[in-house]
Amino acid sequence: MSMSDGLFGSGKDSRGDALDAQDVYVRNNVRRRVEDVREAICCALKEALEERAEAGDVQTCAMVALVASGVLRIGTHRVLLFVEAYIELLTRMKLYITAAYLRKHSALTDIRSATNLQTTVYISCGTCGKPILAQQGGSMCATCRSPAAQCSICHLPVKSMLFQCAVCSHGGHQACYRRFYAEIPLALLSAPQAPSPGSPLKLPPRLYRSASTSRSKDRERDDATDIVAPDDLFDTSTVTPAPRQLMGHPCAAGCGHFCWRYRIHAMGVLMRITDGNWPGTS
Image (cartoon, rainbow, N blue to C red; front, side, top):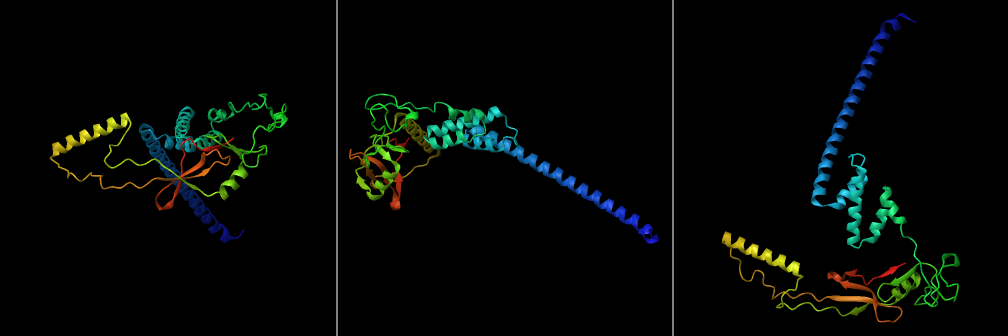
């Protein structure tokens, strides 16, 4: 070891130790600031969650509870209540596919276990009344050898996914119906006539009471503030309602029912009608 190393080596070590200590201090300070910011964000999210829960926003509460329940320290019981309320809302709005997807992929055991209940459907032959068992194939009756489901287009037994109309109960292979509806153009249907401009608007009793109450309150408010509205401000006699047009595909079995129906909106846009008269798959 030379004399120069002995003179300058200790200085380098001391400067290195000082830099390491400063680096550790900066890192710890950054960590503390990050934790403070994270805690502030969590507090803000908790307050927003409570506000949304009081406002009845079930969708936002359920999504936040599913995504950030661990960070926000939301209890499992409360997460379960949020998700169950959201699934009930989806069911009321007839969004059954979304509700089933949420049940199937939920991390909560109580929600996911609901998809395994009552999943067995017992069917019987429509000709002889004997039960059709899955061990026997499911598409043919083992007693009378009649098909359990027959396609209305090709008249062959349906062994795969069944397409069936919920109104006329006709159905068949999905491929047959896709090809049939692709070749048959839409037919123009007759729609209910719009009410005449002079006829009063018929509302349900509850809506009519609320509408009349709101009108009386508006009149009282206008009288109190001496505001006089012109007579022709809400005159709808000159407004001509746009004619409603419906188009649909006739049933492939020829029963006269239109299994697929669309409503024509502005700019020629077709909108499906989901009023319970839609075919389904089983």
